[in-house]
Length: 291
Image 1 (cartoon, rainbow, N blue to C red):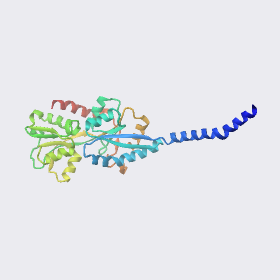
Image 2: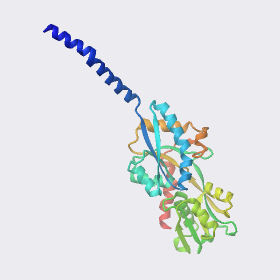
Image 3: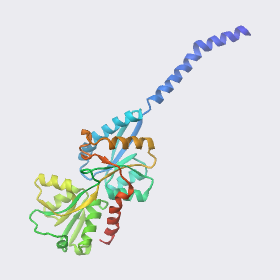
Image 4: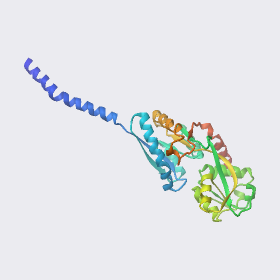
């Protein structure tokens, strides 16, 4: 009996123990090599190809820096929604892990799910404000918004901060409502708005200042009629995104001011942000209901 026990022990040491050790090492390796797979969501305020070209360098940089902080490989893929509403639903429903929205889209998303969290806000010259613009044709001699009464207006998306809510709030303040316009339409992307005004299809339209400048450089005959403040874009974490991952992402963004990779996304870097930064937008959205 003693001899049999000895044989079994020897067999275990020579055969079973190495197998168990290999399994343990394999398990340890798989844990060590665990990957963090993230999906970034946004919508096409511009052409889809422009959107991909804009974000990819920064997302690659973000993944690389987060990998070092978290000591695990991070991979980020992009999911581009066809419009604002679809983009909001992606984040609210958790189909994407984090997203970059316009201010009005953030307010809408927060209303639907107040568990989403601001990771950081883009900076413009060290601030969290930048300009939107209402434009007219370069040959148009109008000087005030009040003069737009009985004329046509091109808005962006129905969920656009600049292209709808802020523009409508300032029109209302100037005494112009939808009943006073001869015609108006929601054209979606900012570049479409500018092109429509430049071609004479609409008297005026609202778009972001950067798109306005690009169109003018391309020869589209536009000039600004009225400029107004907007809040910079927030980067937002979904409800169930790991807080450690969110913290790592925030750390990279807030320290990335001079990095070449962020130039297409936010030349001025990033700043911390809170929900109260968007009260200006909430007020405009409420006011636009009277349009």
